[in-house]
Length: 332
Ligand code: ADE
Ligand code: ZN
Image (spheres, rainbow, N blue to C red):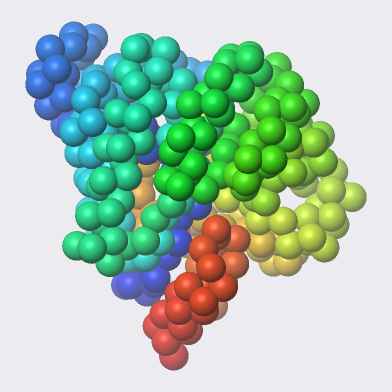
């Protein structure tokens, strides 16, 4: 099974680039930029990654991002992630970034996007990995700040395929961002949103109804509303599920309890993703492995997860056809 998973061509649809900051790179960048961090070694950083819930993770995650200053830092971060993609046979990835985490510290929007984009271009040329960028609004901030961020993104429209919504779900429901998502759609952006991770099934329903999402990020709490599950099946609404994230943040106590395979078998368009791999203990192959080790699953079902991700991706139909061909050929 390990060999099958490792070699399976994969597509990642739920990955926060700030969440790929490995402790070693955090230290290197802290030194390069003379930023003080409250840890004395990469091992100490790793040891601090014990979380009780989403908020306890977010607090440490936003602090980690403080070491990212120059365009080259964002390039190095993204390039390191793309090298991991190569190892894991990830052939296409759609990368989230949180502009407000950086602009609030005085880093220019263009510094961030240009660094990420340049690494993505090199990823295509040197590694053969295609990628796209989705910018997320931080839901703990107000809608006005999201509007300001949307305004900054217009000049970089050619580099950004969609907008998303992340950060603290509890107390910050989708309806808080209805108007800014409407404006983003009018500007031609596709939309996605984190919903039903820690928040109720109602957030999934409202993300679809009010934010016009093409995918739901996480969405695992949909099971609390059987009518919603039926709707997700009927509409083939993709869920970007992140198994190691969910157990690390205690959405599920154990991987054996995770509903990812149960939802796949019900006929939902389920995909597997890594979310914040540097913080949650693993990239794409690790996430597939964690599921396959805890839950009985066939190779055909694992391949279906890859085919679902291709279907749910924001690439052209011809490119989807090419990637499906890679998966089908691999499974022969
Ligand atoms: N930002 C980074 N990872 C996240 C997650 N799992 N949920 C919400 N916001 C996030
Ligand atoms: Zn996420």
